[in-house]
Image (tube, rainbow over the protein chains, first blue to last red):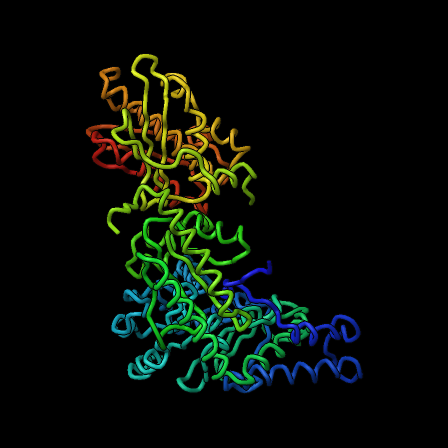
Length: 392
Length: 206
């Protein structure tokens, strides 16, 4: 049986067209860009085109796009580069308790270096508390960071409202948006609302691993964090994979060819999955908002009385790939911080399953998965001391 | 990290799952908040003190279910005293090993077995509730596994100091500042000590 893959928020299968687009740059055109020589000029022109492709997908100008070695690299270059360059203007940073680890670990790094960080709380659906953001803004706030679509529960943050709060306060703070999960799954325009820095990753949109992009609004200055020879990019120095960029650009073309149609397709699949789970399995709870406030590919459900790693493993043994918020399956055996921040109990976090879909998933896969899952949940509940069948 | 085939077998088809009506001894250890809980029921022959039936239920991950299953197999047919000798390392070995991060599952399962045996003995006047002292705290700390290596924190000499006075437990631990398991170890220690009535507060210094 072929693998049924529902973990696209971690990484996604490269599209066949992406692999085709990459091959020439590994076989024949293996060069780095260069001036005045024919082979290097070809690559330089290609990179310009790819940069334009990524820029167009975000409403940015090509000069505002930096290719990086991935989403995390883009976040590090942006956050460290910006804070370092602007430390003279203030030492206060704002993010939220539910942000992507790239943001939280960088915030913690600066906190240890003497910066102050305000961590904004969220509501039960993972929406960042905007009043708290307004109240946290200070004269010395230099950076506000957010994760456009939450990586755990898919909540889409109201970046327009955040921008409005910064503008109304006349704040000097720049707005950084991690769009790793949101990119190609909802429309993004860096000018509406105005975003100062934005990061994306190729391998989450059926592109290759090891390449991403950083958008930096013209006029926003980043210090160089990665020192070395400027082969492809002034921030991400050294050799960035040319084939990777080729694949990334192809993935963007495929994703944005009919973005509204693609989003509608994935949302229909996600809605179908949720509907099937809720009708086939009792004692479940959707984590995160329902409908348009949720990114199109994410369904996160807690199953009462049972633990997620056991569910995940049983599905895995049947070649179905999902993720769980269980501490047992996490690095450091920690309870999922997003779930706890949203006011879920530890049990609800341990018993949560995350399905992140792609255009390659089908209704048949969903039917089969829910059928297997219903059996697994029933069997694990039979084994659980927390479950009392007489309550049915 | 991989589970052994034996762990997978016991996880997929666990032995002795369920409850015993009016058990002779029973125990529940762990907590759902910590992500694992095991309940054990015993049927004991009052003449021979042999465990004639044993059933378990588990809320937890694959290794939690597998260790619950294996200890029921190991204890079945043994006398209470023989079953009391089962160590968590025996249970892990019987499963052809567990990943170090999962060793605490074996501790929990064996702890539950020992608690169920103690419960039987208490019900039948064969054991008195023992007092609570520093030694008892150390016994509990021997059940806290450092997930990095799968060995307990006392054996690993991570426990630098244990104090106990007027219900206040003070524990000094040697754990590196950036150790990813710091929170987990503190949580485990609290889980093990909070269940004792004699413990009013727990201070953990790292």
